[in-house]
Image (cartoon, rainbow over the protein chains, first blue to last red):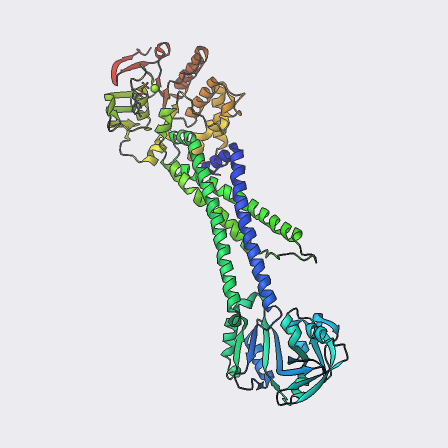
Length: 388
Length: 231
Ligand SMILES: Nc1ncnc2c1ncn2[C@@H]1O[C@H](COP(=O)(O)OP(=O)(O)O)[C@@H](O)[C@H]1O
Ligand SMILES: [Mg+2]
């Protein structure tokens, strides 16, 4: 241990109250920074999740007038080979229609889905609140809003008129709740085979829907661009959720910026606090520094005494701050709960962010000790010796 | 005999707007292994002279030569090394570090140079504490000792690097007469045992007369310089 470190440790130990106070100050600052960061990241994550967690994130559609294309298997095969991040790949044949139960009429979107392929996206198995998913060609499931408004029971039949005047009859075999009002009103789900058969569109689809790994959702635009470049998708159009949610994205962006601003200001105030306390401490210890210089300590060693103090305070404060921040985050998720027991806000506990905050604490307090270190280096021992 | 310290044509002027000259053309040299005292009235310039000798202060003009090396052109860091290795200071206000124990204070000049104490230097520090009669309280914090004990600790600290020269500025100024007597006994013992050169400022004539040589300063000039014949 160098003499500078030894003296730094002893100085901190001898003014224990002051040391504890600074460490506490750093810890509180860093824990607030960690808490705000985790809160905002968690908020954003859950916001993104509710927006696109159960929706198509990348969609292949046709630019043709009839919005349809054939041989989806070939396209899906190409996508599978090109991209490893795709977690769900589901073809769909959609057709707008007018449904009626005899006295009421409403527009619906008949969606022919491959339910096995669509499961990773829509999690329908969990969202069927009554009955079951369709299997026969004339079976369909409807949303719970439509079911409630029209008072439809399982086994009832509904007539749907699709483009071209074709009138089809479906038996309702289940009710779903996708937790989105508009989908619960208008979606009318059948099997893909049923749609292709009953609309006379064998082998055709209107879209291929995809999801990517959760870590890659913000790369959806890049992945979409890569897919667009595939020769098999030359005549098709690849859209992604980011292009369709610009407002949400700019909102998230603004939130991130203000969160970072708050964090920066918290850190700046921590730095100022440490700097001022260390500046006072270099005055308090000027007598000791003068004595040490009379005994031959070099300017560099004298400044290291204060740099080490800053470093030690930063490490202690940073560790305490991370612990406090974790505690704060934990108690927030434990105590702030919705009536149903779920946390009000799901904070994102990201170890990398904690490590970053710790490093910020250490760097900030080392920086804050630069000024006192310089003062200490410049102190002339004769001032101390002459004036007692 | 070789000179431990040599001062040539030292002038010291304080202040720039209001200039007060404190030292006038001082020429003074101290031989190695000698035991010298400087006396003079308060304000005559003794401390200023000593601080210049110890490279803590720079003269306005003139040269300071320590162990044959001129210090005028040396950089701060090199002066620090000179102070650390060849000069031991004992100040009137002892100037111990209150955060450290007596023993740690004694070791401090060694730590400044080497960072880590060896078994030998620890042993030496313990011996020095015995020499100054503080074997029992050496692990007390500096603040938990009496004035005399603190001053004796400062003496042990001045000796730890085995310096060629010890400069002492009224080392007994704050001590009662019995303790003063003890401290001087110790200084003389060190002088004969380690052959250390001593320059001691004192206003106590009785103490000064025990030195081999007495230099009197009056108003910034040497007014008297007498050596006791060596018996
Ligand atoms: N920093 C300074 N600025 C101006 N005058 C000073 C300063 N230090 C000391 N003096 C003056 O120099 C003279 C000599 O002081 P000093 O060397 O401390 O004397 P002594 O140690 O003999 O009592 C005194 O008159 C004192 O007032
Ligand atoms: Mg004086």
